[in-house]
Amino acid sequence: MGYIGGMSTPCGTLVEIRDAIRSGAMSSVDAVRGCLERIEALDGTVCAFTQVFAEKAIADAGAIDARIAAEGAERVGALAGVPVALKDNICLDWGKTTCCSRILEEYESPYTATAAQRLIDAGAVIVGKTNLDEFAMGSSTEHSCFGPSRNPWDTERAPGGSSGGSAAAVAAGMVPLALGSDTGGSIRQPAALCGIVGVKPTYGRISRWGLVAFASSLDQIGPMTRTVEDAGLALDVLCGEDPLDSTSARVEVPAFTDRLRDPIEGLRIGVPAQARSEQNDPDVARVFEETVERLRTMGAEIVDIDLPHMGAGIAAYYIVAPAEASSNLARFDGIRYGRRAEIDQGEDLETLYSRSRAEGFGGEVRRRIMLGTYVLSSGYYDAYYNTALKARRLIKGDFDAVFSADASGAGVHAVLLPSTPTPAFRIGEKIDDPLALYLEDIYTVTANLAGIPGVSVPAGFAEVEGKRLPVGVQLLCPAFGEVNMLRIAAGLADSSALETMPAG
Image (cartoon, rainbow, N blue to C red; front, side, top):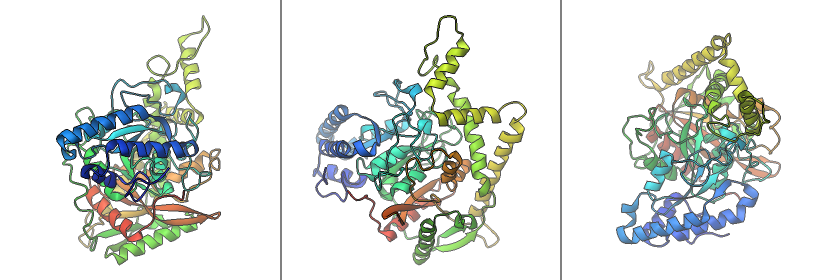
């Protein structure tokens, strides 16, 4: 393994590779080979990938190089020749789309997801699919039929989840961009634990067509990158209305990278009382307070705010999300989709369904299906599901209130929170305590419930057992407020000047 000439990290950042290919300093084949060499060297330990399309990626890169020679890189696309990866719940019409579940271990999608197609149309080269918690249900990537991914900062620790494979691949320099999906924090939480940038866009910003559904009112695809500028470039390509997705928003797509260097002086940043929980790890609390002071030094106005219903977020989420999952996963029955169990002659269809699902789904997915079915059942629907929907509305109302004009005439432009309450935890440390794992998402689920955008950026380090582990902070903004969100995030990233490559 090694550094590609002139790049700041192995494989380089998205912008560095794009610029090198555009200038002729590097070919797409060179860039793809460099990433494949890095994957070959590290993935036996990190386990970020479920599939690597080495031969196809090199062939695709060669075709891109030929197009660049004939047409020029800018005409080929904004990501011409750049290698990228996809979370393995995003469909491609080649390879397999497994969701890291035994029930889909041989599934081949007949179509390509809109988000993936937009990358391809922009000239990107997809080098592989990344590991995840089964059907994106988890916070550690330990609930995968392929086994856990490992955090490149300390391979005894989890990379977070459910997009842990994507986070680990970017953090280890295997690719400059990987797509993840975020239903309750599954982009932002692993981004924080792996020391990279992760964006959950506003609900409807990026098409969900071709994303295997977990909870349809919460799911969003988003980019995971090394820098905020890289994330903005990815959003330029990914965002926009899609006629194939009725929930995609018919709103203008701004140039996300145009205002990244605008000063944040005068912007109002809300700091909720709930962000300063005694449950936060001391290093997380310290990094958060350091971030508040950095923002103040940069000229932002720090405003103390209250999000009174934030504490109900985990409870509401773990009713709404399993309820939707129970419905969405009903199709995986061994007949319409998925692995079909063997049954003896004379056994009935119900036996086939139950045995196929018992063999195909892992323990965490079964837990959530049963929970979701229970809260939707007769006699419990009003007590649980409807109550959770009311809590969801109150949570959204809290954000609406702090973003709206107050008595002084101005709301806040963004809300600052920790991304996670702890640094990366050891693999196996929380696997037998589902509630402890669920609480890793305490600061992230509310953005999904409210449908607003969020970004996690590296902000500092924790010292744990002699290891330096990254700590992230999170910015949340009003719906479709990604431009301001990325502007503040870029200022924070520049001011912290942290390295984002784990040692080795």
